[in-house]
Length: 281
Length: 314
Image 1 (cartoon, chains in turn orange, green):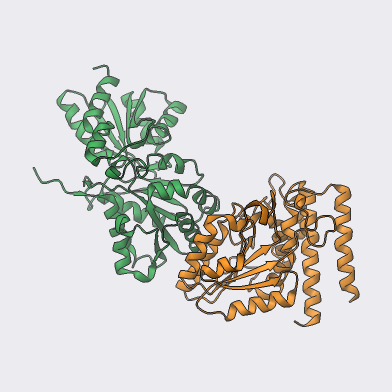
Image 2: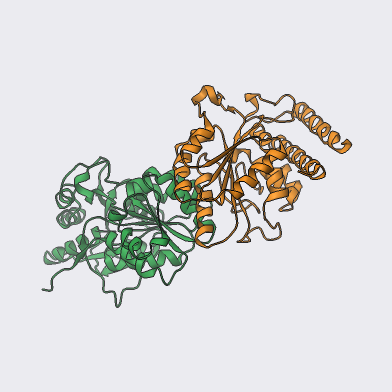
């Protein structure tokens, strides 16, 4: 990837993280850990890859995105805001009564949200439906989804995986945000979903394992998925929960907790330092 | 007397989908390994490219339907009532109801009349479950004509619809030439002033029979067919309450959560009159031939007659 573009995408990811942390802080509730772990993937999808039009969110030929791990929506909202779907100011009222930004993605009221999600395991089935609709209508849009590694403990994920492979949904590309943690602890300890690539491969997916914070690898994997015909692709992205906020990194306590004012200040400092480093490059 | 034609509404469902396919090109049909039983197999045979079998995976069935609907398709997701409304309740609530997606759920084999398969398959809770979902329309047609009209109405309605069909062949009551179906509008099948029998689904034919029997005993019973459980026709229910003073509801569903409670809700709020509810009492079913079970559970004309008499102290 071009170094200039890579720097731009890194900055976008950092701004997504800043927006997500601001949203969770203002909401006094939410899920920062898993929002921060997938921010680089979102930055790549929304600022490099996906065909979307903020002026026409319902454009029928657009690429679709389903955040199956809906609780991580603060990053999705920040990405959509940065992409121009709605003002960044909305982040300040995340989860507030009467506000647009709900605690989990709501396609009816939030421009750019393609599927209502939050109950784990359900988003990927909807993504299959979208991909199938594309096949039926002979449209060339692609469907992306991000799942949590804890989320894949849900049986419905595997029902949908079977369906996607059976119907040769090669226009479907899912990411597993493999940050290794879920509410009750390490996914390996709670009820291990490992080995993940082997499971998806057994269900008929093309699988790619990457570092989910490396834009070269994200890009290569997405391109590989687009070239893959006759089967869906699962990209298992190794990530760090709470990425780039010092005290949140790989700490299960930040799965579903909001920072207090002091902690928020540190988070902003951490992320601004990352941003400053990118400006200096 | 002309021979009574009988047909299962699940059969009507499969036929209607097939008949409407040309007119509605966005219509697609999904099933969960029950196409032969839900009768979507009729559609599959004629339109294989618009039929998708999800296998025995009802949660995914509903989710795929949601995704299709979000892209402009009109999916009919089909399974038995037990597995659609029951197994996939939360998927229907969160992936279809909450985003108000244009998904139609074709639920066959509802109620106790599933028969021999027994309690695991006799879903008497589906109406109750579906009624709790905001914005969900619930259609429970009484015969072939009404079932086909319901499928068409469901396609024309924008938003989620739960359609309930039966396994058992039931008498064809309505004349396709004159029958008019409107979502949310009950049908008065017979006027009467002494009492009103409000029935739904396969109990409508029993209610008509009961009213004829009651007439012989000098009781003038009104019969109303409520094919739309939600939104319920408040007007027709309140008119019956005002004009006849007593109501008996009849449904092949639990007395908890179904038509009876919906009717009680309406009259309690605006014009309280005594309501007797005939339905499956708070218990599970068991295996047996449908006709036998219906009798044993009191879902028959005789029980309607005796319940009406009791309500009238006769």
